[in-house]
Image (cartoon, rainbow, N blue to C red):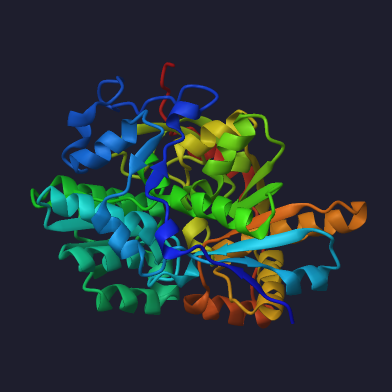
Length: 452
């Protein structure tokens, strides 16, 4: 059995994050203050974010230095390995060359600590003592609990209720690193109580959990808010993944024709893809594919317009693909992909045709995950399985055409805490779900009209 693992020397960890803002094919629409209808400024964000992250959010510098303290922590698991998927290629009988960048080697088991560690560091530098956040499947909450623990910060996590119930070991992991974790919606915030009054049995959503975490931060002087995806500075921190991929492919003597990743809010995908987006914008022939569930089809069926990032309408208005901030997705197992919106940077690139979006059902996604586990050995998270399915589709097309494409998978995390979902799949108990168009249209009625 042939195995190729490409590891950069530790001394070659990227020293800077790549900022795609100055390279965009069109200007990024600014966040809008919902009260004034005007673009927000640093003072509007200061109550919930440390100033250094606010500066990164609006920076037009193409490269931003990674602090030494952050690099020191990164060295626990970075550079992460890039694998050549020889066994999967052989199983499929494809001439395609498939690689996967395995971010599951971080202590929390996903790509998320690439930004969690950075955000904890910048908050610590500003004298913050507690961070509040939300989490869907628990990967982000785990990562922030890990980062806060390293820098001596308290961490409060509002975890979407359905994931809190489906993934108890994620909660235990967060608590082991010192975080307090609550199933959202809770009775601890005004926004949570309001939701519970309307629907006491709600399964929750990322939009609701974001509302609770933002409210928590805004009402406590010692607390800031932290987001694991969507915002510019979060995507910035994740670009260390794509920068490493480029160097590892050079070591392999190969060059990417296709980058494929899963999308919930966009941080994992953007981290792997943005350094290659720059190449595509400069004229290189490369396909960049974003994968999402049909149960939460934000990029493939959402509207490209301004909307709130949360259910209680506490956040600024962001221009993005959205299913409506009141959207409550069905309780599929890819909890990290169940968000009503997506990162504005990524949405702009989808709108401009630079990135292609595809949606997939739950059962074929798990079928692809099992195929990957039985060939490559690693058990992928349900979220990650979406881009594995897309990769298999593309590899089989290569089999038909004889094309020898180089396909790179953004392997965002492991599925060790998702064995309940695998048990359901193996027992033929999972249902495919396609979100009804009429429900999307109804939710979009509540999206505010913003003059552009």
